[in-house]
Length: 289
View: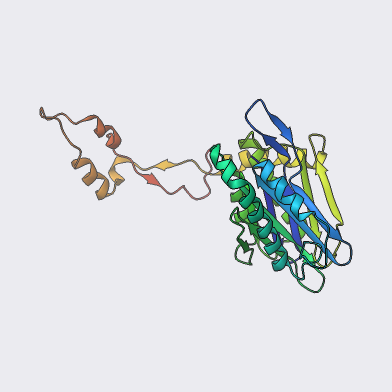
């Protein structure tokens, strides 16, 4: 598995990917999930991939073919939408060639792609291309895409990133998102590839590979965990009211508890154990740890 994320904001686009690949616990390796197509001053396109490594590599090999006057490629596509169609066409070509053979071995055609960047004369754009070759574009309402093992790193992005978020803060958020994923899923691993594209630069100006020795990512890992525990400890614990303050609906619920033939309450009665207590709002200014 893998985890890749890209976020488009007003100042540009941030791309982040891990490099772990595996085919079971005995076959863990590394492979780059990020590819850059760059013609300085004219275009910068960045691809992130997830899914079956053989399929994603087959698609990337098609996309890396030299440009020609008779064929639209990532090197000469007139717009980012046209570039996304080129990626979709490559996915469909690999599907036509390999999907039937894979199905004979009960292997799904599993691959997905994020394509983002800028072509001179237009604004930066970000797309996600599915295994069927169709694609969607990021918007101001939903300015990011994730592929691979996405669920662990999603909450922080939803809470932090907006179109107006500064580019460096977006990069920080991407790294926190990746750290959360690394913490919870062994199929995602270091090193990481981080590319921060500045709007209208039309060249790569910020790129870094982060491994276990990277001091900034180690600080992210350590500080995020410490601050989460600190904030969690500062949130008041539940406070329970006295039995006299129990609302009527709780007493009514208890009266409906089923009883055995001899009149004794069944085990389910434990859910309404007496004396009754109800969860209340925390007292103002009170903190329990």
